[in-house]
Amino acid sequence: MYKIAIYGKGGIGKSTVCCNLSAALAKAGKTVMQIGCDPKADSTSLLQGGRRLPTVLQCTREKGAAMTLSDVVYPGEGGVLCVEAGGPMPGIGCAGRGIINALESLERLGAYKEYQPDIVIYDVLGDVVCGGFSMPMRGGYADKVYVVSSGEKMAVYAAANICMAVEHYRSRGYAQLGGIILNRRGVPDETETVAGLAADFHTAVFGDIERSAEIALAEKANQPVVTAFPDAPAAQQITAIAAKLLAEADA
Image (cartoon, rainbow, N blue to C red; front, side):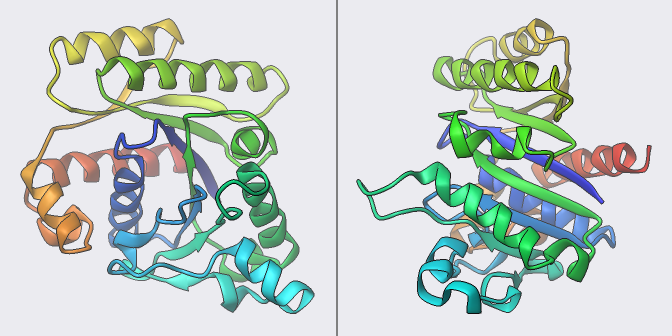
C-alpha cells in the first residue's frame, strides 16, 4: 500500500487533481482510496457525480460507536473508494480535529485491512499546516507529500509553507517531499517560478498540467477530465503523473 498526501492552497485545483489522479490510477487497474481532509467535504465530488457524502465527523456525532465502514466509505468513479473527513459547524470547534478523528476512525474500523487499497490519496487543505492539517504528513500516514501550485504569488507562498512543514517533520522519520505538481494558471514566468520553488526545497516539478477548457467542462459535468475527455492534453498529462506515481509505488 502506497500512501500519498496532496496539499495545496485553497482554490488551486488540488481536489480536481486528486480526483483525476484517483480515476487515472483506477483505470490502470489499481484499488484506490481517496480521503478528503478538508472541512468543506467536497474533495470527492467529481468521483461521485457531484454528490456530497456523509462525513466521518458527522457519522461519529450521529452514530458514535455504532458507526461502520459502510457509513463512511463509498465507491465512486472507477471503483475509487471515497471518504470525507468533514469538519465542525462554521465558527464552532477545530477543523483539524475532523481530520484526526477521520484518520483514527478509519484505522479503528480496519478500513485499510478491509479494502486493501493499492494507493491511498489524502487530499489536504494547505492554507494551514498546523494541528490536524499536518496529520497526514506527520502521523505515519503518508509515505510522500506532493504539493500542487501554480506560479501565482499566494499559491507559491502557501506551497513553500507546506514544503517547510514536510522538511521539519522529515527529520522525525515522517513523510518525504515527493515534488511539486504545477497546475498552470498562465501567469508570467510560471515555469521558472515553480521550478525555483522546487529547487529551494531540493525537489523537482513532478508533473505539469496545462490550463485547459476540458477540465472546466468536465467539472461542469461532475466528472474527472480523464473520464470525460481522455484524449485531451490535460488528461494525458494527469495520466502521465499517475504513471509516475505507480512507478514510485513499485520501486
